[in-house]
Image (cartoon, rainbow, N blue to C red; front, side, top):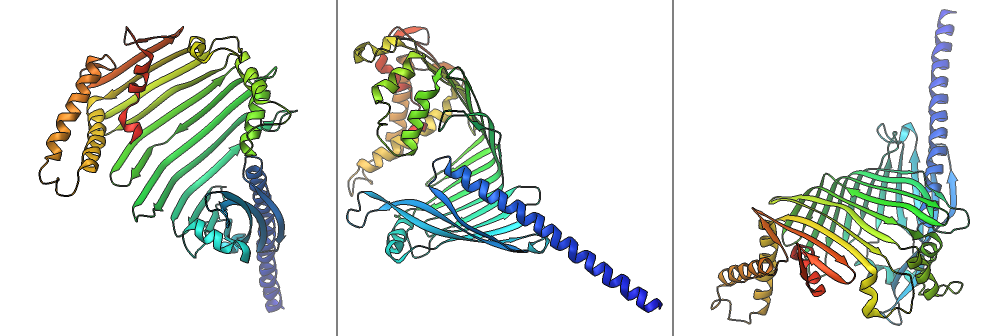
Length: 428
């Protein structure tokens, strides 16, 4: 009798474990399906042409199919793009048996038709089409790895929070907050000439905050920040603690909705709203665009600045173009290390000199000396013209545009001088 009772307890324990596993995999599978469908809907509502075709869920896994519309070179005319619908098959493993550290593993592969296969191979640079492996953690974080002949992307611990809702009566205007966070992103691209380009982001965050009041986007803020950005091709560039905060004010919600709809639908104009009318709606609200804060740390020091431009006119579309600057009010402040400016001008000038030399001239021209001379002259010119003000090891700019006249570092300057304010390192 004791042996029977003991066997009964063992069988009962096994049944309990099985029930727990099946129950947890069922719950996980249901949650994974919900997340998958929400992700497809989110992408479709934000400009990606993707649709859910099928989702078959089992106890320990699932198979899904989506259709994605890609734009690739036309067979008849390679200079134009045409839309090609590509089915993607997603093989999903979920639940405790899929792995101790992950709630689900998803492998996504393109299943192109014979008609589109060659076009896609040409677009992605080889016989291997992109393959994506996604790992969903128990806490909700997502790891993503995408491989193709031309590029490889790895994302660690991606988390998306979206509390935004569509404003009634609009197609593309949302209010609320949303955020995208990831621990690490690494993008590696192999160019046609064999050069390798690498971009890496650490602790990257994007947050959006928007509200609409009486037909106007009352607030609209977009913030980018990271612990570090690494960019590497011919040279390596590292920026620590970069931060960029954009803001919009007094934006007509209907005009913005029309603009976004046209842009996402790849149309030049909306039949229901002529372009002139949309532009007029924008300007009548006296819109403001601002970079509230731009900051980053280079080896030479910190770059910081802000920018604001506002429309102050009456929105009359017949205003002559030569008078349009009188309807703008703008402010720009910026500080950057002198050594950083010199390094990037040096890189640009050195490349220009080397590219201009013909065969055999390299031995006759001292590129390094010529570069140093030109860089020194450019820096001196910028200071003499008052484009930058030197404060110790820092170069600064304080510019204001009012009624068509610009005041730069406390002195009137021609408007053309604005083009010389663009730091060379932005152009590299």
